[in-house]
Amino acid sequence: MRENNVKPDSLTWRQLLPQLDLNDFEKCRLTPMALQEKARTALDLFLTAPSGAVLVLKADEQPAYAEMVESHLRAHLPQTLAPSGADYQIEQADSFSFPLVQVRSATSNEDNFAAKSAVEYALYYDAVRLFGHVLQHPASHDLALQPGLVHQVCNGVLILAVSPLLHNPSLWQRLKHIVLSGCFDWQSPNPHKPMNYHIPGYPLPLKLILLGDRETLAEFSLLEPSLYDFAQYAEIENYFLTDSTARQQQWVNNLLYYADQAGLATLSEAAITALYRQAVRESEDSLRQTVNPRQLNKWLSAVADISRRAGHKQIEADDVQNYFDNLAYQQSSLQEFSYNDILREQIYICSDGSAVGEINGLSVIEYAGTPVVYGEPSRITCTVQFGDGEITDVERKSELAGNIHGKGTLLAQYCLSNLLDLPAQLPFAASIAFEQSYADIDGDSASLAQFCVLVSALANVEIDLGIAVTGSIDQGGLVHAVGGVNVKIEGFYALCQARGLTGRQGVIIPTVCAENLSLRPEVVESVKNGRFHIWTVDNVEQALYLLTGKQLLPQNDNSRSQQSLAEMISQRIENKVEALVAHPLSKWLSWLKTIKKQ
Image (tube, rainbow, N blue to C red; front, side, top):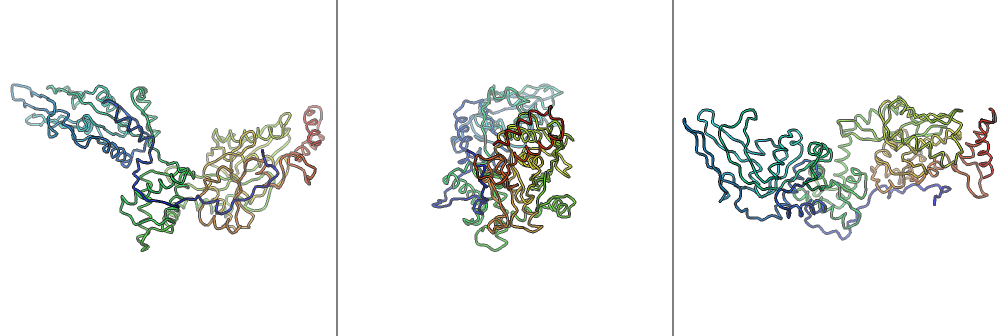
């Protein structure tokens, strides 16, 4: 049941930071694979599969993930390597004969083509490293055979990155034949010149694990459409679900594992909490934290370096904050240029006062080729005139907006028609524009703002410009989650703070996004002191009440002291209708009478 007549309370400062429960925390050695439950299950099944098995793992192609998989496999494979593979004997050629190459099964791990390891991995490789090589002396023409990775893991497991196979598809065709047939055959080192000698092949059973991120695997499936006819699939996850105290503490133990492996100083509880909050900012989800080894090691080593230079005996929360402040500062040039343009009114955005048909939306700005991501307000305007009910999206019309943005504009239009129960199209035409926006935009996070500014223009009611809005909506008027909430709030706060906080400014966000907040200390402090506010809404009615102080729909009680926005829209339509010929608009006249009776 919607509480449309209740003004939502603003969030308290404690609700702006995720909480990490370290009560009764016990430190224990928790390896990274312990957090990868699905991948661990897939690897355990893979080990029991016969030779020729192939497992595709979705994972970033980085050494840490390959080493994690390798360590897990080694722990579950026999520690003693039984002799397997082959031993090649070469009788060199003379002036009257060809070289004679013979092969027998390996009887010792010292044989030249005997297996040397139960598990090996390679992220960068070519045909020579993978399949070995035939060497021939340029003068004497003596032959020598060089083993490759496939020979070194006979009866074992080979872990490979997918990217090199995409760059050289012939590698995959030969590798697939070896894995599925369990046999190795030599090929001429020069594909345009056959060998003038014969090198016998030999049985080479092995298992294969392929690592690649989602985009790389998508490309690889085009190269090998039948991949999953013979291969299994699992994922090494970059994020760990922390939906309970126990799982939060598992994540902490994983963090401490990396710190111990790197020999870093002890992390205080405050420092651990600060890193947890940064992880929430990075994932934009309070229930999923990064377990990416490269990222965690980068954070820990940089924070430890700052702590060491500060002379701290252990890593403190200030060290964590200083690192991320320094990181933000060194990347802030583009953001400062953008904010300065707004403060100098080169880009015109009001952060105080009110206006009809104008609202401050919130955008996330990204620059290709950089890690720069920040939030900034966007001035959205709407004008209406008597017309056929068409609502023009200026960005979409000028091909500066994507399909999802266009969908959001249509949802705003149809949501209004649904909530007002219109008998036909509005007898108004409207245009909605992102003012002074010259780059491509996309996404539906402005659909709540577009709805509100459309209602403002139709009802001729002012919107509070000290409140910025983000949220997506559906046709029923419910407000749904959007991304980038933290940087959006901080972007509008930075503008208000630079101009001077009035105590009335703030941001409206979807209620479902509140649990993912992890805001910078200065924003939290301003909310704590009542100088800035963050409201959460479940539906469009609540958002409009915050922005205009008026209800969208008439209430079924006798205590109404002012017109609803719907009534104001109907009054405006009636005034227009009375000034024109009545008969084409008879449907509207009957609807207006219905609104008056409510």
